[in-house]
Structures are given as C-alpha cells and as structure tokens.
Image (cartoon, helix red, strand yellow):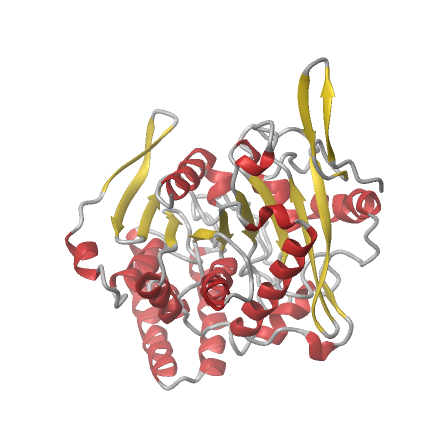
Amino acid sequence: METRKGVFILSNLIVIVLGRQGFGPTDQEWGYATVRDGAHIFWWMHYTNAVQNPLEKPLVIWLQGGPGVSSTGYGNFVEIGPWDANKQPRNTTWLNYANLLFVDNPVGTGFSYVDYPEAYATNNTQIAKDFIELLRSFYKRLPDFEKVPLYIFSESYGGKMTAEIALHVYWAVKNGTIKCNLKGVGLGDAWISPIDSITTWHTYLYNMGMIDKSAYGHFDKVVEEAKVAESQGNYTELLRIFFELENDIDSYTINADFYNILTPIRADFRNKKNGFGNILFKPAGPEDEIETLMKKEVAPALNVTHNWGSQGDDVFVYLQDDFMRSVTKIVEQLLNETDIIVGVYNGQLDLIVDTIGTEQWVNNLQFKNASEWVNGIRYGLVADDYYTGFQKNAGNLRFYWVSRSGHMVAVDNPGALSFILSDIIIHSN
C-alpha cells in the first residue's frame, strides 16, 4: 500500500499525515520483526488523532494474555482500539490519549508465527529478549518515536511478560543498545504470582457466598499441596494442581465465570475446555466475530498472509513449564533499581487473578519503599464523577483496586482504566 507520510498546507492549515491506510479509521503502520531465526512478531500501530502532531502524545503498547491471545485482535477490537468488533467507533478508545501499538506477543500469537517448533519461546526471559528485538525493529522503522514517552500496558499473562520486558528494556537503554523512553507499565489483573492467585481462590469464593464451608475444607487441602509443590520448585506438579483446582471450582460453583463471577451462567451451559489453558486466558467475548474479522477483513487489508491464530494454542504448550513460575522478584527489581512507574490494577470481580492474591504478593514485596506502602493511605479513585475504586502509592509503585470490574477492566470499567492510564502518565513526568 502507498505510504502517506508528509506535511501538507491546505488553505493555510498545516495538516500532518503519518502512516498508511490500513484497516479502520486511523493512520497506521504495521509490520513484522524477525526476533530470532524462525521467529517473527507482528505489530500494528494506530496513530492518535487527538492532536495535530501524534508525536506530541505518548506511545502505549498493549499486550494481551493467554499466553497465546492476540493483542491485535482482542485488545484492539474488544478493549481499547478505535473500532469494536462490529466496526463501530469506540468512545473510550485510548487513542484519545496516546498512539497505540498492538503486538502479537509472544511468537506464535495472532499474526505472529514461527517457522518450526523449536522457535517457540519456552520461558519469560526469552519472551523479553524477543521483545527487545521487536522494539529495535520498530524504532528502526519509525525512529521519531525513540524520544516519545513509552508505556506498556497489559492484561493477565501479559502482565507477567511486561514486568520482565520492562526490566530488559531498562537494561538495554542503560547499556546503550537501544534508544527508548520507557516511562511506566500497567500490570492489569496480572499473572505475576500464580501461587498467590490459586491459593486464595477458595477464600474469595467463600467470602462471596459461592462455596460453602464443606467445599472450603476440600480446597484447603488442595491448596496445601500447591504450597508444598511451589516450595519444592515442582512446577509440573503445581500446574497439575492448578488444573485440578479449576475443575473443582467448575463443579462446586456450577461453572462460575473465572473472569467475572457475577456473569450469569445459563442452566444448559456446558464447559468447553479442550486442552491446556483454554479456560484460563482465552477471554470471554465475541471470539467468533473477532476470528472472522481478523481472517476475512484485517488480513487482506494489511496484506498479511499468515493465518491469524493458527499457532496460538501451541504457545501455551511450549510455555507450560514456565507458566506457574512467579516474577515477583522482577517486580522488586523494577521498584528498587529503576525509576519506571509500576502500576498494578485489579478488578474486584475477577477470580482467575483475584484481588486477594494480587494484594498478597504486593504486600510481600521486598522493596525500598515497603514501609511507605504498609503505612500509606488508601484513597478513593474517581472516574466520570463516580467513585470507582481505590488507590495507594509508595515510591514508583501505584496500586489500584477497581470496582465493578472483572478480569477485563477495559471492558467492564473503561472509565476507571482511562483514569489509571492518565494517572500513570502524569506521575511519570
């Protein structure tokens, strides 16, 4: 497609046009980065139209969870992009605040792909190293963005990836191997400490009236097994227990929605799990519509030939040994060794990454502002003239409890998440 970069003067009005006409109402850029031999990551950026010169606004990268769920598909069309899945304008798009870069990460996700199985990422560190190469390729293509403030926001397993990515970016900038202006990260309902999530599920469900005392006793025994497996570093056993707990919760709660426990469940519902992780981070929503849209309309418009989503299930399989490992030590490094703002936010109705578990690992962080965190004041979070949660800060840590939201905060409470985005941007400058 023809590039439309340039500055034009029309009737004494300066109009800056960047990017290309892709799919949707914005100026765009997209492409592939070969991050390793046989490993290719796809990215797709929408320029903001909130200002005349998009370079005056930050660049926000959005990373989806899974692992194996597409940012260019789900994050874009269901959560924060310019259009929804029906190609209707989204009033709450983050393009009102920033340029948006959706990345199908890790390799094998969405339009990203590998040439052979050995090229899949098998751990979080490899994912972070791949992402550095993705950024190098992106900045080589669009060098004007090197100085633009960068923020990486994420959801679910994307938060686990983002924490280590941010640390590797910080090191690369410090070593002079990349030019980048990373200012902050948003870890949304993030799979940072799996053991803290799965060992608090039953407490959360009991307090919400979704299991009784007898069921609580059953889960208590399984939770103790999980703690032993984690203490021994037996992550294969911990993954087995994870699936056991999921299945037991399905039985005891009659298939409660892991993403938002208030979601009504039809009496004729049948669980459709069919393999690793399919219930975990395959988000609820118009999945069939997104798949059709990406394959039938987006791919031709962007001239992408890879079959969207064809390798997504394999992404989890190759990461299963790393899946239950914690990255709290990485978060501690971000808080102790960098000035990057670390925003942690969690929806109160989320089960898969429940707020009890998230607050638990945050409370246990060993960082230089820990006493400030313990003694700090929690105050109300206001969005659209309504109280919509709570907030507490300590050093470069900012924690947000989001009311009336499940796992997908951008869907359930977009006003709150827009506030969080603005708050992190403001306090990083």
